[in-house]
Structure formats: C-alpha cells, structure tokens
Length: 169
Image 1 (cartoon, helix red, strand yellow):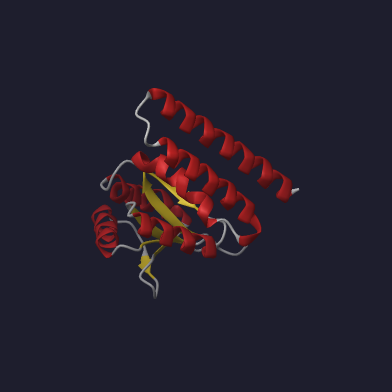
Image 2: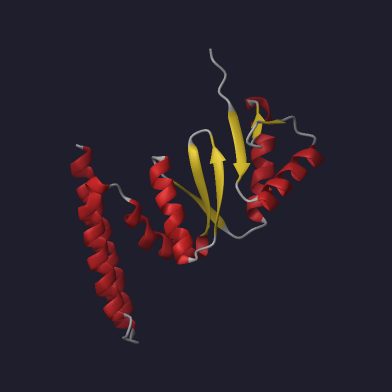
C-alpha cells in the first residue's frame, strides 16, 4: 500500500514561522519539502494538526473554505483580495484551503458565486441580479428591508442549489 504524503503550508510567512515554532516546541517529527511545506506521517498527524490549529486560532474565529479545483481557488483568492476580506491561504495535498473569518460568513456567501465555472454563468447572472436588488434595498433603514434581503438571499441560494443538482444529474 502506497503511503499518503501529508503536508501543510501556510502561505503567510509569519504564520508558517509560528507553525514551525509550535512544532519544534512540541517536539513533533516533520520535514520540510522544497516548497517549505511541513511533511509529516500519519502517526504525527494529530500533533501537527493541533499545532496548525493553534496558529489558526491565534488569528481570528475561523472556518475553512475549499474549492474543487485550483482554478476556482485562484478566482476566489482574487475576489477576496479585491473585496479586502481578511483570509489566509494554506496548501494541503488536496489543494488550497482558505482560512476565513467567521464574522465574514455573509460576505463569503455573497462572493462565492462569482467563482463558479463558465458553465455556471446562469448562476452568476442570478446572483448579480440578486445583488442589484439587495443593493437597491440598502437605502432603506427599516427592519423590513433586512427581512426582504434575507428572503432574496435564501431564494437565490435555493435556485442555485436546484440548478447545481440539475447540472450534476
């Protein structure tokens, strides 16, 4: 049976340095590959992941976002940068993972449809129309406007999910 190579690399050099410091203090066995990623064995996975979580937890309350392809991940990175939303990238064997702030969850939900492949352009058009509608409501100060915004968001998400299910079939 072929051994699965496991690795983690924080793209931010300060986070990577902190990660290495935690691993060294804990005495965890690892090696660095050519790109500087921490390569580790399954036996050491729990300790390595614990050290990575310490680094992540020190940044902000977080969660991960992962895209199916690296092409989508690069699009999402560009969108996050343009939107000035705080995030950190991590490299793992299955691709790029984005460490993002839980407090920005609504922003992420608004941004992610922009990443979809060309075959999903209808999703983006629907999302753009919803954003336009929601933007028009931003001028209202009442609680009703917020309720309408949430209803529109919910309906857009349902339509996108239905459309995705149809394309997956």
